[in-house]
Length: 315
Image 1 (tube, rainbow, N blue to C red):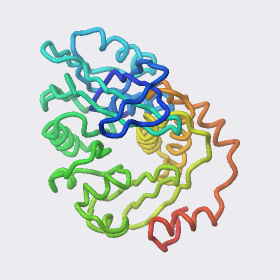
Image 2: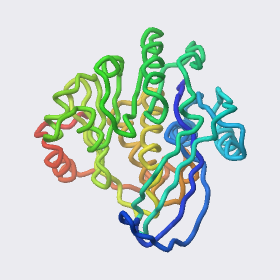
Image 3: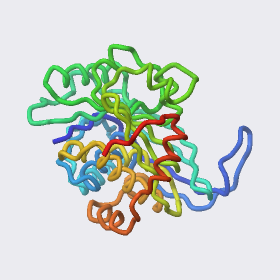
Image 4: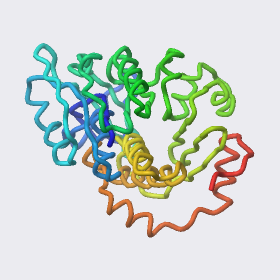
């Protein structure tokens, strides 16, 4: 059973030919609102695409923005531990999605920043705690510390990127980052191999966008090339990957299996609009994988070379 402790935002999304440069005004087209926020996205992915029993600790304001977020989590089967905040608006995100599926996001945290250490529910029965960095760092550290004391595995998706105190890294079982976040967390501008060498977390997963992902678990490396899809909107794809990865690990899958499942779900999410609205269900992920050719050794070799590791893949 998984507990996600993190953010929930209502996303205001406009599609445009390209993302505006500083000082530029771009005439957009479609506008819609979608339930989002890294924490809520990952909770929905754990439950809907990953098939895991999932709870979420979140904070929402007393406003109309909260209703679609609660409805989305409820529809996905996520059990909510809700903190209602009177003096803060529900978190929001303003997203521009370009025709080539790239996005630019500005977040107004609002009620998300009201989550405190005392809000963490009892951890009895939970096996994994999934965290991100859209809530106060002090709360993230407190939750991780309590989970470690309770024998619950701690997973952190270090996004948005920021330097992290060593005492937090020491509490983690799994760290999930993209290339940019890896450099920030490692506080090093060198190669991926050099950055990973500076991190003593037992398992580090690095997402590589359209290339795929790699992971290091106790010194053994795994690689998963990306699945080919025609992207429409990449918003929430990384969160979908994170949620499904953790769900798979909680259900007893190996790390390579979890990477494959997370990558498939993330690829499918790129083919649909929105964050939570784009997350596939478990049957869709299974059906998609059944249509995919087996990864070739050439693909694995190319990904290993890109990552800078000339090491055999984990089977």
